[in-house]
Length: 186
Image 1 (spheres, helix red, strand yellow):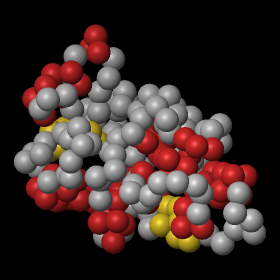
Image 2: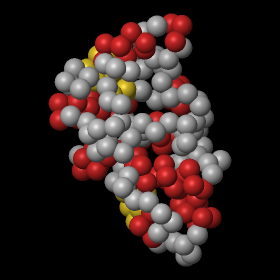
Image 3: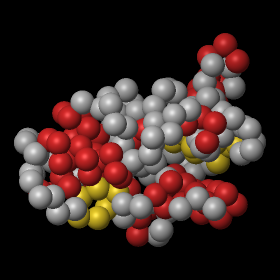
């Protein structure tokens, strides 16, 4: 969407069948659209740690950013404040903070390669990546590690690799390497 205002219009349109609990503008303005204890329709099909129906077990925060450029400081600061409060109110651990791309690999790519997951992790607002030491460096061992981190089991290898890189090393390309085993940890 072209602006936070356009996003709010769409997220509040019953015919669109999409909503979120919060929207944060590029200027850092936080708009609550759905009460936290009510279901919003933001995640769609996907799973995390084997749990489907993410909409019924999550609080959706939409960020006014197309994903093609870095997220502005006011927006990130507002997200940190909002996340801290939500995590405290609902006893959500850092590993419970995920992006749409994490729970719907190949279908969703947001928040995208410019999102600063490391910044959130440094503040305890997202899981810190932890290096795994696989017995073998192959597709099966990587998929096993990614599934243990929470990624959906039915994800094809190339999609899974691209999705995990989006979160931990969006600049990385090419074949699987040992560095790819650095995944968000619980």
